[in-house]
Every structure is written in C-alpha cells, then in structure tokens.
Image (cartoon, rainbow, N blue to C red; front, side):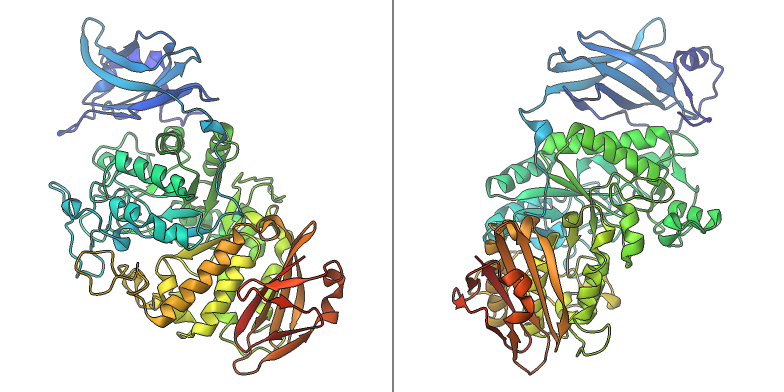
Length: 621
C-alpha cells in the first residue's frame, strides 16, 4: 500500500496535465534516471524508475519497445519526480529503452534505460558462508594505487594525509594491487567499508554518508573499476562483500535539496536517535522510545531515511539488486541494521533472497546480549510474530567477551575464559549458529592488540579462538601488524594508514622485510591457521562441544561426522598446564590420533601440554 500523501496512477497524471497540482520546482534541477540500467530475467519482472527533471510530473511517459511496457505511474508531492514501473517480459531483448515524456502534444524529454542480459548462473551465485574468512578493510586507509584521483574537481573534500579525519587517498586500485597479500594469509572474502560517493564537506573518508547510491566515489575510482576489483578478487578466491547503509544518507545527497515528499526522511531537521536498540524487541517499550530509536538521526550530517515510504524502500531494494548484478557481489554487510523500519528491512531480505537464494547478508546489530540479538536472525520465533529474514548477524556478545576474558586471571565464577564459555552457552538462541559473524574488533572499536595491553601471547590466543569457534570469522586490516589504538580516544586512533600503501612510506609492511619480528610472528600464525581452516569441514559446518574451564584452561571441540578439531586455551600468565585427556573421553574415544596443526607433530590423548598464555589446535582422526 502506498502512503496516503501519494497518489498513484494515471488519474494523478491527468490532474497534473490539467494544472490542478501546484508546482514545487526548484532551480538547478539536473535530469536523472535511477536506475539507468536493468536486466532481463529477474523473478520480479518489474523495475521502478525514478525520473527526476524540472516539472517532469506534468508530462506523460511512453515506451515503445518490444517486451517492455509501463505498468504504473506514480506521482508525488514534488512535480520534479515521477516513478515509473516498467514490466520487462522474459522475451525482451537487450538494448536501449527510450522513455519519451510528452505533454500530450509533443515529446518534451527523452530518457534512456539500458536493458541487459544477466550473466549465466547469476541467480545461483554463492554468498559468503562459515567456510569463509573475511578481511575487513577501510579503502581510504589501505593503499593508494592511483594518486591521480586523490582530488577530484568539484568534490567538496580534498586529500590531506596529515588530517586525522581527512581523506588520505586510499582507493580501489590500491586494493587490487594487494589482493595477493590478503589471499595468501588464507582469507577467502573481503569486506570493504562503503565506497559509494560521499561528497560531504568534511570527515567523509569512512563512507557512511552516501550522496549517490549509484556511483562509486570518484576518489576511490569508477563503477567499472569496482567491477574489476570484484572480478580480480574472485579470480584469487576472494568473495566481495559490499557495505550498505539504509538507515541514513549524507546531508549533501542530491535529493536533500529537493525531496520527493515530506515523508522521504524522518524529521525535517536533526533530532538525535536515542540509540536504544533494545526498545525494538522490548514488549514493554513505549512508542515514544521506539520512535526516537528508529526515526532519530544517527548524526547531524546523516538524515534518517523513512523506509515506511514504499517508494524509498523500493528504491533501496532495487539499488541492492543493481549492485549485486552489476558488480557480481557475493555478500552485503548492512550497517546499523535495526535502526530503519524493521518491516521494510525484512521485505528487503525477502526480495534479495527471491532473486539470489544462495546470497548472504550480515546485519550490524550492535547488541551485547544474546537474548536481544537473536531477535534479528531469520526464523527466530519472536513473540510478536516478527521475522527479520536476515540470515547472518554480527556476534557482538562474543566480541565483548573477548575484550575482557583474555585480560582476567580467571578462577571466579564467571570471569576469565568462563566468559567465552557463557557466550557459547547461549548458542541455543540462534536459529543458524554457524551464520554468525565473529570478530575480535572492527572499524568502530579499539584495536584488539590495544585491548590486550599489547600482549603478543594473548593476541595469538585470540587469533586461534576467532578462527576456530563457530561462525564466520572476520579480521580487521592491520591487526596482523599488531596495529595499536584506543577506540575511546577517537576513530582516528583505530583507522591508521597501512604502512607501505603509499609511495614514499618509510616502511612497507606488505613485505616480510618491512615487518618486525613480532608482526611476522602473528601474521605467520594467522596464516597457518586460516589456511588450515580452508579445508576443515568440522570448523566450517560442525557442532561445538565444550567443557567448563578449569585452572584457566578452556577446551572445546568442533566436530562433524568423522572429523573433529580440538582447541585448548591456557589463559594462565606464567603457568604451563597439563590437561588430562580422560575428561574428554566422550569425544576423544571416537578418534585414534591427533596432530598439532601449528607444529605438525603427533599428539597423545593421555595428557595435553599447554604452555602459559597459549592455544593449541589439534586435528583429530
């Protein structure tokens, strides 16, 4: 159903032509058609075009192209917009579809939609899964492969590598130049922080204030270069996950100067969200608190988008489909997932799954309690009947536990490694436990090495844990270099430039010679585990069996059919532990031999030696 302040159809067009609808035109109107291209052969054969031009609603669109017809016309408050639903038959042929806009006597304007064939097998593309390991990187801070695009004429912010919150010049070419570095560590997917245009006056490097949903930011490269990046990444065994934001756009988005309707955004000026995500699933929450959480602005430069507006929702859904198809994506990470209208987000998931049933989307629901986080995963039996249809969610409870567990001495009822045990004890809440994304840090929190008080031994334990626990492991760029930074001191401290990513850098950490001994030690350790993980079905898809930590040692198993992996974590600062194998007989009795995946040496089941502040990963056969 369309909102009451919109009238859909030919009758409205007639009223406009008769002059009954007042004009809301503003100066400097630039013609746009979004999307400007589409494909033949989707399950949903209708594409809704947003045509923008001065007083375009006073005109009537017509199409004369075999296999393409206008199904519906929707006008809104602002006569500079017209929404046109095109029905594309399966037998339509690729080509340029002309939309002629007439005043009833003469064609006054023509816009063109490029119609394409879908690539063979496109619908069945495989999204990221628990068999993958994801490398998260911030494009502006990773590598500058093309200094020529550091500054672009007409864009509001220029590069200044000395500015903590300025643009530093990283780009798509820089990422393409270093795909081997990522793949060699054992990663099988990359997640890029947003790369769409962010033409904001300042602090736009992070990418979370979109100003054009169909254009890669020119300071990163072009749409075609983005497609090339995905292609080259795929060739090296790396899937690509695109970061998207439906909750808000940038304050300098082109439509903010001339909104289609009063309900295109929530609130007409800045009202800050209360950020209380618990209100959305809380059966006792007040409507006022829920409204402020979901409709308040995330920040002053980020107007809140209204997904209850059907045209807005459909625009964003189609934009996702467009990028998946155009670029060949294997996944989406949705920022600030619970903040937009939850029913609109559920519809988005259903529409994507309709066209790409094997695709995967992970939502950022920054909620630290499993009992509240599980509300957001697909098919959880919520008491209010709501189903998000969101396949994957980010495991913030486990991240929080990692930030504390490895720094505590343990021995108490619920501290130390018991925190990890307790988080996994809540696994029964999630409908698809292996589809949680697990991570020790990301671009919004303190660097895990800083959290661990710069302790290399603890860092290796975290590495072993995140790579073997259930779910989809995600790593943040530079963590393999022991990048430091306190997140409470600001984002500039956790988003450093990758050393060697810029010509003239004194150190090139992309090379072994450019890294310290400690950096090479942790990178080698990560590489050993992730490359082992690539072929471990027990880690990819297995179940978990864990034992209550004793003497600061936590032991868990990942097992599947005749395969199993045993992980032992000794969190004692200075005490080696000898762990008797009899305690684990219920699973060890099924196997006859074990091998330490780091050393390659055979392991006896009688006793397991675990040095202080270390992890052991043992393959069982």
